[in-house]
Image (cartoon, rainbow, N blue to C red):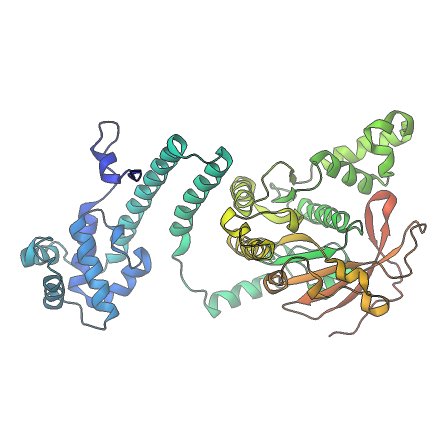
Length: 476
């Protein structure tokens, strides 16, 4: 069977249906001329366009740049003589037009001071060509790929996001001067801080809130209340954002629900905010349970909730890639403050990872979530299940440990903060508002410990205890 021929960018350019791909030959010549004029400028240029020659459209320029990088890597001085020798040794001197063309490149540049500006033009044209190539590959996939449409869409999104990632990869170092100024500016000024609070005073005191780029795990056994806690934190953050951005559009809190529908989540939010029994808000019981007074309370609460920047997605595929794509779109439209995912074990990775076993797949998902948090610059809360091992222990040994995180030890490695939601052995199902422990099992930048919250199950609501009795106040 003949191999599929990949559509080449030059083939596209030759078609009557397309224009010549974006490029700037004069800028390319100016970059190379500056490099030959001033050997030290190579570090400035490579910081912009990287170390691969395919950033240049002209094949001659690609060959010349790759030879210059090869000389640099071998600690050989960069000049006309060494470059000519390197090209000649690889039988490429004639391909680029000989020593005459190298001399011409030097003559086209008067000063090397603008090399970085020329390099940015070259990089910009290259990225446009990359987008064209990605678009062409996507068209080819749509016509020829035998995979299901969903997998083709994921591959297409990955292709475009790779171009975006390459475009933003080159950046300057952070300096102590700049970091110090940002730190001082943020002291005592909540408007300058990117930290978002959990909304529970004792938890915020112990953890200092949620910082951009953090991966936070909230883990518990089924039916203990981790989804409720996640939703409560979501609403606490949304309320903070509305107060902080009174005169502007508040950034979003994004919820990816892989277990519950958006309507189910909304009913839980409504129950918690209006202090109405969740059972009363089920569609099949609304007519029998809702009084005129409750209806007024519901209308008032719904009107308040309409101003909260909470965005729920219960229809996306369970892949990190699609979540990242949708979250990035939301971030570009209005800003993004927090992502909550319910829950980690319902997510999936590409087939090549899932075929290697569930543990390997969860490790991949966990690592990708951490990278996603850093790329988007927001904290991500991922709810997680615990293994059954925790149910086999009694007494103090029944408290969850990091090793109880289900399916992979990579979760504890990638997470910046791990919170366990735990109900004690003497937990009584008949107690209306039991006390639950939130155990800080890991904190990369702080101490571990325990706080207690009251679980108002009827309202799907966790609240602060007025006088916590059993909290561990000792830093570990």
